[in-house]
Image (cartoon, rainbow, N blue to C red):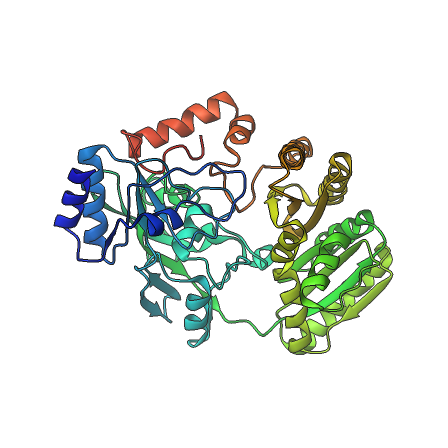
Length: 457
């Protein structure tokens, strides 16, 4: 411990090395439940690439594990500390280095908050589409580490599609650049994509070149009420099948609607089984035409009520309700297990109805919301962590929900990552050969196993 602190301080400014036990303890874990977390030896808060390199050289020399962290808004335990590790908090590397309106790119450090970047590029008439629900807090580095999605991904795609290039500090302290600034480029293996979603297990992202798009008009939203999840799922399939390109297509079940109303008094309908939100970010008249067409599709699929928002302000209110879903359900019992199962769109209703049935089986509240346009469901198991039996039932129901997702042809995570929470399930999804290849990649980049050990597999 003394050697570690001495070597770290030899290359870092005063204040960058934090040893106060209470402060160090506060960096132990992210927002996930049921994820083990150890006690870190120290928290380091670098401001420069060179400082990150010094940390990694020191860690490699002393064989000390390093756990990189962003804002710790993750939901899988991927940022949880391990015993004796260096927690490498990247939030002080928070500069937007460049916004290029000709190339339509931004170059940023990993600690830049998603919403900060979004607002900065908006001032130049540009748009950074990935928008996780925690966008006001989560960092770009964390988004890259977990390959985050968000509400707009049905039209614009996820984080991986906007990361053009990276500067990465490797386990031994060397600095590597991947990718490009150009619109196209196929030189060599796509190492940039390899790092996106790697959860800090292959290297430390210290700079990212991100693609931007022209800023679209403010979106208008339609809300459609359905008597069953089956009819809502049918509407989703018809919307996509007929070639509509919504900027957002989201579902909330009745349990979620009630939770949001209880927390925020938003007046959402509580008698409907499923509320579908569809949005279009087109010029006003075109958006109205699309909403009318989608409204007809919803009515034909069985919607009992179809209400287009009158203006952008009303639309924003509906989007706020969707963003509050996770927080509102957490208030039901105090703790939640948030699943992140992605299935084919055609199996969406089966997934959400199945999750509700699993909740009934275990006597637990399970509320679901979903990025319906890409089949990414978030069944949320609510439980009292002080009740041992209820906590056991919560974990068992969570596992059954993931098993159901795989049975329906899906994946255990669409955007939250694996972390600690889903390690066993990753092995089931990949199979022995796939897991062997993944571990082989890890060995190449991190031969001593120092980067975020105990995560993924």
